[in-house]
Length: 264
Length: 325
Image 1 (cartoon, rainbow over the protein chains, first blue to last red):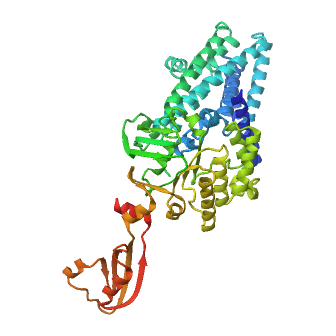
Image 2 (image 1 turned 180 degrees about the vertical axis):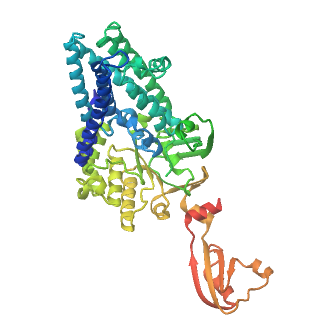
């Protein structure tokens, strides 16, 4: 409970600091909305023209896109500095976090707290649109699907966060992580905007085992909008996400003893 | 009490690859360069001591401070601060520590100074009464009034340092680690900071470990000096004893009018000083003023020709330490 209060306090301070540059804040929210909006429109148009991709209709792909948008928004909202952890290693910024009687990860998570309005708004719009259309087509009942989507987004965000922490921890040995992050985060996220059925078998396997980002959108969607697997997949995914999180936190605690800081 | 027993720290630095995918290739590379920053360090600091920790750049000063404050883990050996290990019991130990890194502020850059204090107070779980009392005391001593509502990025360096000191003292720690707190300050600000530090030690009984490149800091503040070079502690004692050991090395540059006729080699060797360079009309002489006065040197030299000008230099204290050890 104390930690939550502290989190709100620190995140609030970080937000106030950013509000010193209001224009920049508004601009970057708008840019995120525009950037991902255009990306979705392009992809959506292509899929619409071809009447679907990998056996999935345009609103089904839209649903995947919306889930990924929420994952990304939540992850970046609460852990943007885990994503940008390289500078803490290279510039030795972790020093001052280690000086406080608070878990390092908690303080790190409060830095650069951004409400990610652009992503959330876009994700919300596309989710609404997709669920509405799929409901109209008689494929789902929108309110149960919406409730299940929240569960999927929760486990998806935990997955993404755990991956972020694992990747960041590798940096304690290598100092540079941006290239690795491009694979574990950017590449897998991009891949999971689409149904995994479009990929060759080995790649689908990889996204479900070694880099199991497939569990953030594709696997829950199989149940929620396609009904191909049972509802058990939702708690199973959440359990998997929590196990991964525990592993990631352990690895983090081990890794931090190898932090090297920087010279002056 | 701070006990450092046989502490060493070796950094393993991966050799960075060049070219395409350098990040990934470095990641999977097993090539390391080992750099030994601190070797077999022994230290024992009693409560209330004011210790100066000096040595040239790269000697291992900051590494030591970072190990003492739990940021870095020693490769071998152990550190105990008030009986606890700063690595294993980090959150417990840092409560008792105040740390200032002169090169980098710990305040929230874009927010008013007072906001930083509010945040720190909640991090250290200070109750409102303790916090207000502590703020009052610190404001009085460090003169925070004049800039408490200013964003940190707009502070002068001297003000920022006072802010950083206050931030390090907010939770009333017994021990302070100060890494170059006077770096970059002008003479007035330096004097001011020194006065504060003196006050903290003598009035409030804080144990202070201070690293600096400014020998005046040491002279005016520290009852004890520890010298480190190449990661090893090479001196631990009073500044006076260190002075006696080093002596007062000086360099004299003596310019002559006309010809110089120094005596023969044998006679030169018996003189209490040495000629290190002879260029045109200028002789460079090094001597130790503990053994010979400048006047004696001049008396000798004036017999060799017509002395036109004399210039004396005292080398940088650190420079001397570097050369002697």
